[in-house]
Image 1 (cartoon, helix red, strand yellow):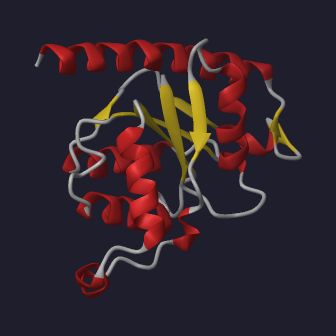
Image 2 (cartoon, helix red, strand yellow; image 1 turned 60 degrees about the vertical axis):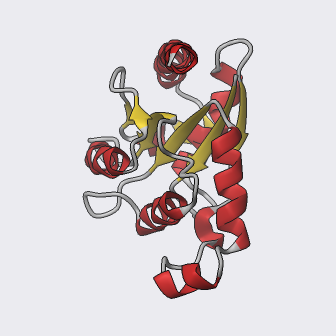
Image 3 (tube, helix red, strand yellow; image 1 turned 90 degrees about the vertical axis):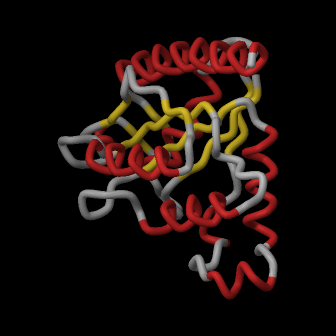
Length: 186
């Protein structure tokens, strides 16, 4: 299986980018993960820009998402919600035809220095993903709280976090296989 990973942070020292990088080492056997290019290259969504043609970073990411078996989103929480850059990227991707997020098995993870681990961002992100018809796996959820104590120099060092995230990825692999089997039947 081929999964693409969308990181909702553009910060160089992002805890979420570190979590995203750790996924390849704990993914189920036979799963390849590719971290998508930074969403920092996307202009703010504007229908006038869309009318002139989609920006190259948008179409390139859309093609990668469409071709992948699944999408993994790893995001921080900003002001109790989804980072503006991530929401903007999803807005752009939702405008592509065919829409690459529709029906796509999707997984959400978050990391935060706070005590809730990005929970509020995940719940808001789920609302956005409903609107684009992504098929989001509900449980288990990974919300890494106090992430600054579990990620050191860009590496996830907390074994409990790695172990629990590995279980989530295994559950997601099963979720993706079931979704693909359902598509084959339909």
